[in-house]
Image 1 (cartoon, rainbow, N blue to C red):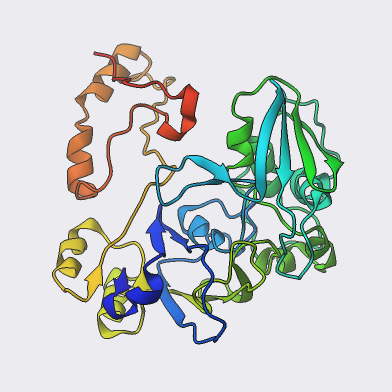
Image 2: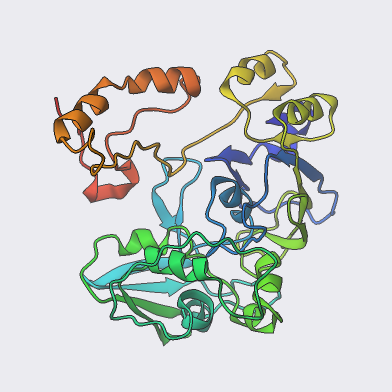
Length: 369
């Protein structure tokens, strides 16, 4: 939500996919940029900002201003791929993608991003863990939750699990030259570009990671390339981001973003109405119309790569027969769910697929009769 008097500087910003998106524009040199206070129900479920651990809707929202991928998604449209930290990319073969990096991209610590940082991002010290077997197809799952108990630079078990699920067959990431890298998979994979542009594949600073004394220290103040850098993070309380004025996409239009944890919906709404917060997130659909009646406010939203699924235990005696599972599936009125739970603000997707899949998208797919 944005207060109408603030639209002059928020006009280019949007809450797309539950994510705070900032425009890549340059503004005048006078630093009269505002501070924006945003009330959220939570900042991060793992008490960390590291993309290889914090995989949640709330986490993605605060990660977007900090981290970037080589291949970006157009969050203000239909999530189609677009140049990010890589200016271009091409297929070498069915297992290999080569990317040309932007020159002059600065990390939050002032270092220039090079192929060395990209290679390190997906290396064992930060991504897969020591002793990683790149010939194994084993996918790791864990329910461990990393918070304050992490020892030294040892990677939490769930980080390795997320890395392996994201890249189950990655053979290597290798530099071609200072500004060119290649991703090489062990098996043919039509989704390589999607993995490069997907979650947990955001690029980080090698020096920033190595200089952190512990993993948790790094995870709470990561060094990346996004338009905003971390000033202070207090888990379950606040996150303060400052503008990264050397950002390759232009000087960020907001000086400081302050995320505040406000778990109660009523408190977030009251804070918006009173002017305590310029924006709030996660408003239930049944409250949207009430807020929109006030001409001072507007409600924004967008696509998110998230499906709501019904999962069956086919080993359960009553569900073993596939006809029973089919009957339950066909008994669900999905549009009614969209209308009642999301006030018609989302849609029933055409199966487990998205339009930004490009050639892989099956146009006109229908649920079997």
